[in-house]
Length: 144
Image (cartoon, rainbow, N blue to C red; front, side):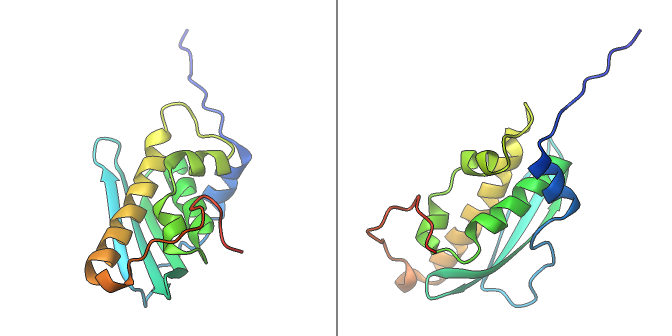
Protein backbone atom coordinates (compact mmCIF):
# COMPACT_ATOMS: atom_id res chain seq x y z
CA UNK A 1 0.00 0.00 0.00
CA UNK A 2 1.40 3.40 -0.93
CA UNK A 3 0.81 6.52 1.06
CA UNK A 4 0.16 9.82 -0.60
CA UNK A 5 1.49 13.02 0.85
CA UNK A 6 -1.30 15.57 0.96
CA UNK A 7 -0.38 19.22 1.02
CA UNK A 8 -3.11 21.45 2.36
CA UNK A 9 -3.09 24.93 0.90
CA UNK A 10 -4.82 27.91 2.45
CA UNK A 11 -7.74 29.50 0.66
CA UNK A 12 -5.77 32.71 -0.15
CA UNK A 13 -3.14 30.61 -1.95
CA UNK A 14 -5.82 28.97 -4.07
CA UNK A 15 -7.46 32.34 -4.72
CA UNK A 16 -4.20 33.98 -5.83
CA UNK A 17 -3.30 30.99 -7.99
CA UNK A 18 -6.63 30.77 -9.80
CA UNK A 19 -7.18 34.56 -9.84
CA UNK A 20 -3.69 36.09 -9.90
CA UNK A 21 -3.50 39.83 -9.42
CA UNK A 22 -1.36 41.97 -11.72
CA UNK A 23 -0.31 39.03 -13.90
CA UNK A 24 -0.50 40.96 -17.16
CA UNK A 25 2.96 42.28 -17.90
CA UNK A 26 3.28 46.04 -17.98
CA UNK A 27 4.21 47.34 -21.42
CA UNK A 28 5.51 50.59 -19.93
CA UNK A 29 7.61 50.22 -16.79
CA UNK A 30 10.49 51.87 -14.99
CA UNK A 31 12.42 48.82 -13.88
CA UNK A 32 12.40 45.03 -13.94
CA UNK A 33 13.70 42.52 -11.42
CA UNK A 34 14.05 38.75 -11.57
CA UNK A 35 14.84 35.94 -9.19
CA UNK A 36 14.84 32.18 -9.53
CA UNK A 37 15.61 28.87 -7.90
CA UNK A 38 16.74 26.51 -10.67
CA UNK A 39 16.64 23.50 -8.34
CA UNK A 40 12.95 24.08 -7.67
CA UNK A 41 12.18 25.25 -11.20
CA UNK A 42 10.75 28.58 -10.05
CA UNK A 43 11.35 31.88 -11.82
CA UNK A 44 9.69 35.24 -11.11
CA UNK A 45 9.95 38.51 -13.00
CA UNK A 46 8.47 41.77 -11.71
CA UNK A 47 7.97 44.99 -13.64
CA UNK A 48 7.45 48.20 -11.69
CA UNK A 49 6.31 51.63 -12.80
CA UNK A 50 7.73 54.11 -10.31
CA UNK A 51 6.78 57.75 -9.93
CA UNK A 52 7.75 60.11 -7.10
CA UNK A 53 9.25 57.30 -4.99
CA UNK A 54 5.99 55.32 -5.21
CA UNK A 55 5.18 52.08 -7.02
CA UNK A 56 2.24 53.18 -9.15
CA UNK A 57 1.92 49.93 -11.11
CA UNK A 58 3.41 46.46 -10.85
CA UNK A 59 3.11 43.21 -12.75
CA UNK A 60 4.57 39.75 -12.45
CA UNK A 61 5.31 36.68 -14.49
CA UNK A 62 6.06 33.45 -12.62
CA UNK A 63 6.92 29.96 -13.75
CA UNK A 64 6.56 27.45 -11.00
CA UNK A 65 4.17 25.85 -8.57
CA UNK A 66 0.85 27.10 -7.20
CA UNK A 67 2.49 28.63 -4.14
CA UNK A 68 5.08 30.55 -6.18
CA UNK A 69 2.33 32.13 -8.32
CA UNK A 70 0.32 33.00 -5.20
CA UNK A 71 3.37 34.57 -3.53
CA UNK A 72 4.14 36.79 -6.51
CA UNK A 73 0.50 37.77 -6.84
CA UNK A 74 0.23 38.66 -3.14
CA UNK A 75 3.49 40.61 -3.30
CA UNK A 76 2.08 42.82 -6.06
CA UNK A 77 -0.94 43.57 -3.89
CA UNK A 78 1.24 44.40 -0.90
CA UNK A 79 3.44 46.92 -2.71
CA UNK A 80 1.19 48.43 -5.38
CA UNK A 81 0.69 52.09 -4.51
CA UNK A 82 3.29 52.01 -1.74
CA UNK A 83 6.40 54.10 -1.21
CA UNK A 84 9.70 52.49 -2.24
CA UNK A 85 10.92 52.66 1.36
CA UNK A 86 8.05 50.42 2.46
CA UNK A 87 8.78 47.92 -0.34
CA UNK A 88 12.48 47.83 0.56
CA UNK A 89 11.69 46.52 4.03
CA UNK A 90 9.28 43.73 3.14
CA UNK A 91 10.32 40.26 4.25
CA UNK A 92 9.28 36.81 3.02
CA UNK A 93 7.30 36.35 6.24
CA UNK A 94 5.09 39.29 5.24
CA UNK A 95 3.93 37.41 2.14
CA UNK A 96 3.50 34.15 4.04
CA UNK A 97 1.40 35.87 6.70
CA UNK A 98 -0.72 37.69 4.13
CA UNK A 99 -1.45 34.34 2.47
CA UNK A 100 -2.44 32.75 5.76
CA UNK A 101 0.74 30.68 5.79
CA UNK A 102 2.51 28.64 3.12
CA UNK A 103 2.88 24.86 2.98
CA UNK A 104 5.91 23.31 4.68
CA UNK A 105 8.88 23.38 2.36
CA UNK A 106 7.48 26.19 0.20
CA UNK A 107 9.03 29.18 2.00
CA UNK A 108 11.44 29.55 -0.92
CA UNK A 109 8.46 30.77 -2.99
CA UNK A 110 8.15 33.81 -0.72
CA UNK A 111 11.92 34.34 -0.88
CA UNK A 112 11.95 34.29 -4.69
CA UNK A 113 9.16 36.89 -4.87
CA UNK A 114 11.01 39.15 -2.41
CA UNK A 115 14.27 38.52 -4.30
CA UNK A 116 12.71 39.72 -7.55
CA UNK A 117 11.41 42.84 -5.77
CA UNK A 118 14.80 43.57 -4.19
CA UNK A 119 16.54 43.10 -7.53
CA UNK A 120 14.11 45.53 -9.18
CA UNK A 121 14.61 48.09 -6.41
CA UNK A 122 18.40 47.71 -6.63
CA UNK A 123 18.23 48.30 -10.38
CA UNK A 124 16.08 51.39 -9.76
CA UNK A 125 18.53 52.73 -7.18
CA UNK A 126 21.48 52.11 -9.52
CA UNK A 127 19.88 54.08 -12.35
CA UNK A 128 18.30 56.77 -10.14
CA UNK A 129 20.83 57.51 -7.39
CA UNK A 130 19.45 60.99 -6.72
CA UNK A 131 15.97 59.52 -6.17
CA UNK A 132 17.06 57.26 -3.29
CA UNK A 133 15.97 58.79 -0.02
CA UNK A 134 15.56 57.58 3.50
CA UNK A 135 12.23 58.40 5.09
CA UNK A 136 11.65 58.83 8.78
CA UNK A 137 8.36 56.92 9.01
CA UNK A 138 8.24 53.27 9.91
CA UNK A 139 8.76 51.10 6.81
CA UNK A 140 6.39 48.48 8.17
CA UNK A 141 3.40 50.79 7.98
CA UNK A 142 1.90 51.11 4.49
CA UNK A 143 0.83 54.49 3.28
CA UNK A 144 -2.87 54.79 2.69
